[in-house]
Image (cartoon, rainbow, N blue to C red):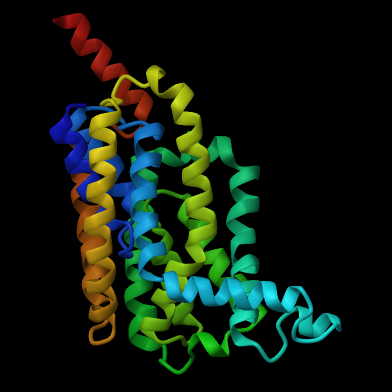
Length: 301
């Protein structure tokens, strides 16, 4: 991977991370088409931190308010009884607990099925299938579900269901925002509320995972042949941060006026295109197949 290719992948990450179209699927597909191989977990994890930093910057006031209220209630400043410590009559503190509840499904599933996620689920035929299914599901749910609930009306059951939607994003092609938004709209949340929950709830899981992978990358990156070097990787991360911040602003404005229909159609169209590329052999279905093709090409030369 050269400097220009790294920047392109950073741009792809920024443009797709927050939209319900699956950034992991796009990085996987674009990486295969451009590099003829997987971009690698080290590079992918580091540029993902750029987009998550953009989320933290944009929602910094909300995050600071939630954290301050959560710690205040936990310390007993609102009352010594356990209900007060759990955020009774304090919506921001209560929402802090809901974020924790919503993070549990992806945390548990990630630990239990890590090997399957990193191997079996990276098959592009699985990506095609879930791109298509969740595209149709998002379209139907968004058109038929009412917009009556806001974040202030969330309860622990809703938080858990949001978390299940986020958990499904461990399958490349589902999309973290797509999963949480679809579940949120199915529960009757407004489009803007579903997006805000999706963004804020993702911070602990995605940022924590990204930091862990980035830490591992400092020792493992030399084993990844496509790692472009720290200069190109950091430049791609800056691109993902700056462009990602602009995408957040635009997306929130878009969903306050329009439906998710355009994203559903895009998902369906992308699934069809990738399926055709797989059928004609332009894309290998698995990273192992891509590596075998690359080795065969080198041997032939």
